Length: 95
Image 1 (cartoon, rainbow, N blue to C red):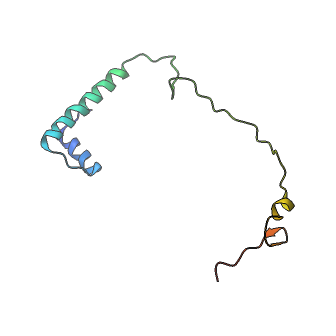
Image 2 (image 1 turned 45 degrees about the vertical axis):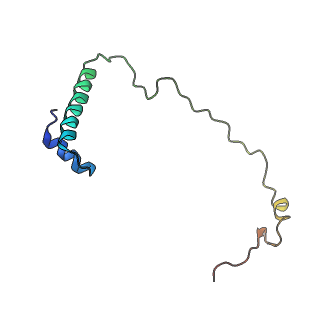
Image 3 (image 1 turned 90 degrees about the vertical axis):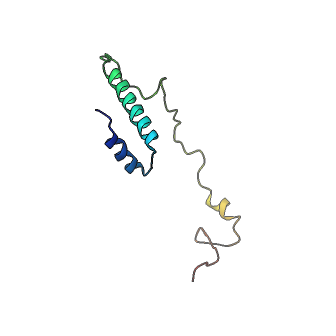
């Protein structure tokens, strides 16, 4: 792919930015250099190489999902100023 002035101006429009002529020229050269480097990387032999998302192995450490204490409804409700049918009674906030 060849980077030209029209593509840089299109990218300006997409990015909603305005570049000066000097910045357009520099962007055109920089984008072309990036694509050239990527083409160089594409020439490498990667047969038998597994894709990696990290440079070192990452494993998620999981713990068992165990219930450690049962709900103590009576103990919890004992702190409430008012209770009814196993629930807290609170003042009405919306009419």
